[in-house]
Length: 410
Image (tube, rainbow, N blue to C red; front, side):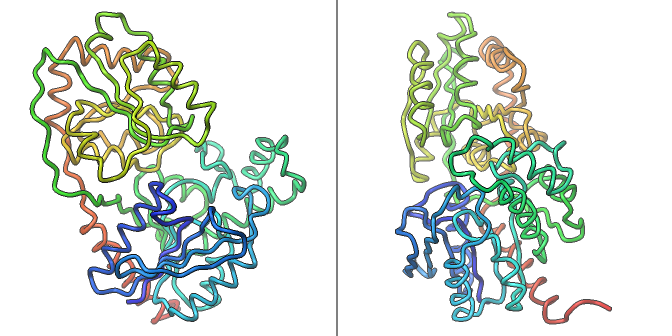
């Protein structure tokens, strides 16, 4: 099959979670003998440029559009549309799998319809339902309500000169989601969100993500007398909640804190926020390691006892929790979004991120009651591999292309 993946970026220029996931998926599909092309946005490129290169057996087309205004509120980009049409007509994909449209154009799904190409969309976050990637499930009352929320949240934005664009963006973004023949979601939580947003339930397929990690070597068993090593790994942005974790650590008694050490892995695009984290960590047993590469996962997790995920927004899946599980490390996660699903069958626990002191209480418990951490570690679940996930998606692609050949039922 000719399979075209669409994403807002692609490694090595962009290294976010979605970009890495798409790169691993593309490589996996290519290993099965498929012809794979990644059509990616390039926020770092010069405006109105398009380049083509190869990454192993995968062709990568990078395009940079007009770059006018706030990309979160963008609707259409004629330059991106032209390059996309040319790429589709040249590559002739059997299916287009959309992973993200940031830095691209919301019109790409409808263009696929016009060109007669089936569309699969994976919902990695809520950007199609919320300009700022975050969403409260109780606000899912239609595009108009979401547009008003975006307008209210951005009324002081220096680039927001045309309020009608915000309202229009909400409608067009939802329409882009509804254009898909199949919408793939990674969790039950996301399934509920997209169906309440108007996606028909029979068009939604739940497929938890697979992980592209080598067979791990689990760390040696920890002696109850040693320090409990906590780890936070991910982007250092406010919604990920690293500051929450540091403030909760500061609530602990000195004798408990002396038994803990926190390693923070990740970088921040916001210097002020990073400075705040450094100040909070100064008087605590914390090491800030900075940005990390996927190849460093063994270093991060083989010496860790517990991953802490204090997310403030509604996570759709959490790859980092599964990465920890792959190395036998349990997780303590907030009660937002799909995070509780990750530990529902074992491998950790949840805490209320809205309650001051609840995370501190959970950390105090694992120090004073070592059996708790031992039980969490023993219950770490199996992690789906990327090879399994690729096979599941291959079946979805074959089903959607077969349906396109048969045509609509009468």
